[in-house]
Image 1 (cartoon, rainbow, N blue to C red):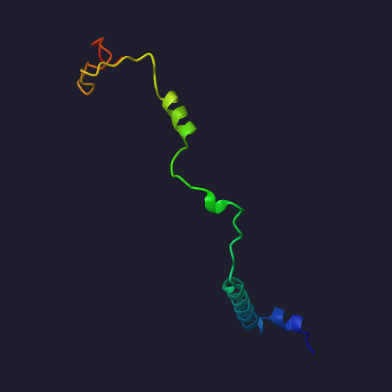
Image 2 (image 1 turned 60 degrees about the vertical axis):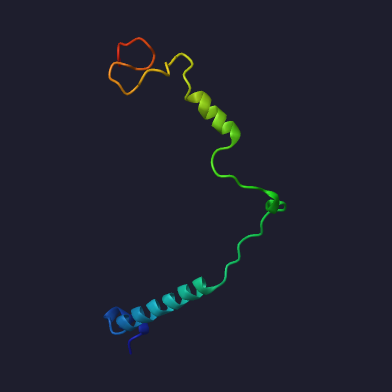
Length: 95
């Protein structure tokens, strides 16, 4: 008489075992996702916090300083879009 492992090796029960295993895994995964998950509790005082979008005041000031070149003196009466007029009064255009 053949044992169960020999018949599986022979391939008689392999499709049925594969289908059964797939069904068991499908049911187990569906049960795992069906459970209700509650979010963690918020820390004390979180209702008092007012969230504002964007950068905070210190970060805005730092960005303004980083993108401001004190050596460039622009003439507000000149048009920067005109070729040869880069706004600093030298009239030489882009270098």
